[in-house]
Image 1 (cartoon, rainbow, N blue to C red):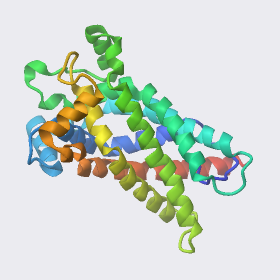
Image 2 (cartoon, one colour; image 1 turned 180 degrees about the vertical axis):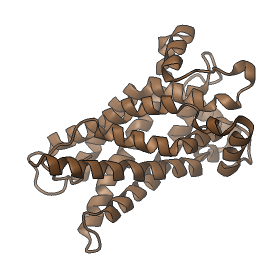
Image 3 (cartoon, one colour; image 1 turned 90 degrees about the vertical axis):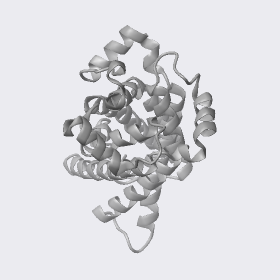
Image 4 (cartoon, rainbow, N blue to C red; image 1 turned 30 degrees about the vertical axis):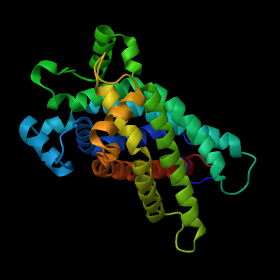
Length: 293
């Protein structure tokens, strides 16, 4: 993600993953609450009640359960998708003057989401399980020590193929997320800059990232719910595949269940998107000042 669509200096590939990792440390408790709400079939417990319930029953450190897996996920998923998006967008537009057309952003974002989702799937499996572990009965908890322990134990106990469970909905979500987050950020930013009220500034970066966060949360919520439920299930669990999970969820809980956890999703994704792009813009601007084209 460049600070300007027409910037000539390309920032390092890993800047996106680093920025997303900073955001993850800040928003991890909200992500944990989102996973808890998406995997429970109990009605009536909202975001705030779930947050306090976890802190009271499991202790404050439990709000950061799975942080190592979240960081590993960002180091794989976000690094790959941000870097791939920037590279493809640059290649598609290097002979193009002016703002990058939206359709080229969407092509770049779809490709980047597909690759990033596949790379991040194993860490995402561990992340979902570690965050959800605290609400399972004691005899059913996995008790992974950290992300690498989770990867090793899943491979040994359930087979390496388990690390790619939910790959379909996860890559679909990654494509939707990358299009609705990265491409929409660029599109919102271009729109704001085209008005007489905004210029390249922190205010513009904040407004564009906030809009991108709202858009991404709404678009990705149904796929995110199904992905989370499949990943949290054990081998031979209640869902045969993504379609079966979708059908069962709607049949037993209604269409609204597909947006279960929307508020905590936005409460997490909104600040996460804002922090990610604000950090990315700042380090990109600094990098370009030190390495002019």
